[in-house]
Image (cartoon, rainbow, N blue to C red; front, side, top):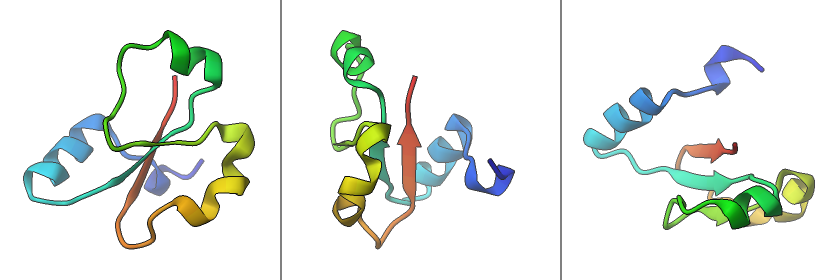
Length: 69
């Protein structure tokens, strides 16, 4: 994956401190998601194997941050 498509946690924090809003996509598989007690409250849950089925659900008006385990 190209480095310019990746973002670090520190960079997200910095940009959020400056008021930037992100769309969060949780791409963890169902087992990992069920076992986790950490969830981003506004994240859209889209397992990577169903990602194309949810393309229209992803906001187009802000940067997107996808995360997994």
